[in-house]
Length: 152
Image (cartoon, rainbow, N blue to C red; front, side, top):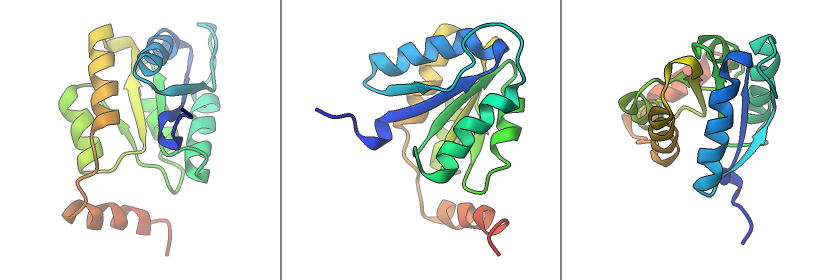
């Protein structure tokens, strides 16, 4: 059976998020998702925007529905991704934030602080985020107001 469009997930990290990225790729694969790795491919120092922009552009263009970005704190990749019109990147560090970022904000890029999450936390956050649906309703109106900021 072919993998559904929403099961293919672009992922990228900088050097500080590399080890967490490798773990998240395994979590994705073990749960039927297909990660597309945009790098980096080692712990050698790199600039996080160079990798975050690749995933953010691909999601912004509609090549993918969602994506995952990881750096040491998660902040840099999140700031980078949110420069794109169609992106709602969320910095997530626990179960509740994973749920809320999807339910209320319809986040389409998950940003993780790779240096600060255990293997169990990574798994819980990633799977919760992927399996949580957007609640719509009053939240749709709010998401549309965010979109309107760049589409006059």
